[in-house]
Length: 103
Image (cartoon, rainbow, N blue to C red; front, side):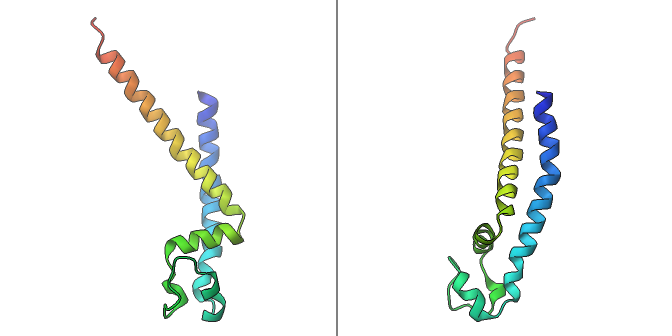
């Protein structure tokens, strides 16, 4: 189990670095002229006034299309949350089994 905790601690800075880099690159779409940003919209309506009115889901999808580092961010984020859920469920099961015993 210790090796999994080690991997978890390695994933934390990897997640924050890749997430910060990806979102900073993807958020630059808000500063593009309308002629360049509107063709990239997927869920955002085409009749928005400014490119900064883009939906958050479009920012993520554009980042996935244009920036492969975003995949590292998604995978490490899923690992971090999945591992915490696994450890929490395991601890809950341990407590239930130890509380039910007669001493």
